[in-house]
Image (cartoon, helix red, strand yellow):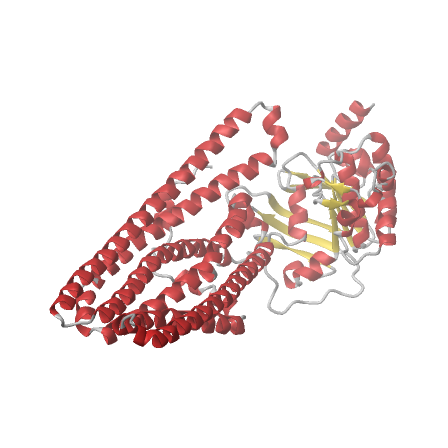
Length: 595
């Protein structure tokens, strides 16, 4: 997908201030003690630095004669003590500021990730996962600087600038007045280039996220890329994305470089001018050499602080741009949320499921009706199968029952309670599902089975594994149930992954079991074993089965036939053979092929 960044920039609200960073202050406020310690250490280090020019002035004005040697020794002894205070204050400040930065960014990541897990599937239909991951990682890393090194440098130089300006006025009001004339020329570039850096920073982060999203998408399907001999085209496309990111970053760097040049030249040039003017005063006898040296040192401190503040301002603008992108995610609201006053499920839950005149279209495809006034019921303990051609809306029923989506019309109930009236935790906790394409996480086989019930004992995990016939292939693995699986379970076959998912569902021991083509990836022998296990685990609970292969659901209590989003028939296998032309056609085709 190609992103038009000009359009993106116009779409977003314009902002030349640092308000996006203000959203992060609650994370900082949790660590007030560490902030106070860092600020105190900062003040000690700044005060120690500002004392040095006073000692230099006294030494120069009193000379280096033998008569003043004791006084000079005292001054240098005091300077050594000041240096020790400076070193200690700087070290304490560095530690606590870095600690605060790392802690805040960890909290931001945790908060953002928690928020992302609550967003509904409809959000991820329209967002690439790679783009979201980029904001979770790269953007949070960018804002870390705002609360660690950048904040430390900014505060230190702000204090130094303020102190140096005060001491400049105290040392020589006349020279300070001349220095004040240069301040507008130094501040103006900060404002002009700062806005430019902010805009370019946002675009650089966008392009970086675009390349990350592309890479994740292709690498997660590397077998498909290689099977279609698209390695070179994929590399070329990624190279184009990274080149775009580089160009945006280079423009941002150029703007910051120009800003740095202007600040350093104007600040240092002002010092040279002041030094020349002061030298004339020393020659004329209107100012002492020590006073001029003290003033120039403070002027250097002020100029250096301004120069570093200009660089820090660029970093702050980068952090503000990253904060905007994070704020956009945090402002996303889940389309599905708990009701204000959830209804309780009956205890124990019976597992009665009812669809009543349900109509639905996906948010991303409002013009395509997936379901139209579909009604059927699955009574406690029943096995109800849903069959029909591809695209008939079968899997959508499961999404509605788990309330990943809400129907535009009609109702879905569990034990007589409309699912939108239930707390999501209660609703989904009463349902176990085996999807058609099971998700296997990195970790061990035991970890993946236990994902359905984190507090399950090893004995419970192994019992579920035996019921799903997982133990048949675990015996041959080097570490048994603790064998580590690759990302998405790449070390397992399709059938093995499906059996692990079945074991996970069995371990849940939920009153409602949803099977979405649960045996589709198994060979004939494995299918027979798992089918036997599923028949055993289905007893005493409501089971809804989606199947393309009718042989797997012939013994279902009832079969619901869907076609183009509509329920066209319902009954037993024998009844549907007689009264449903569509079912009879599917049965004839499949069983004749099987024969």
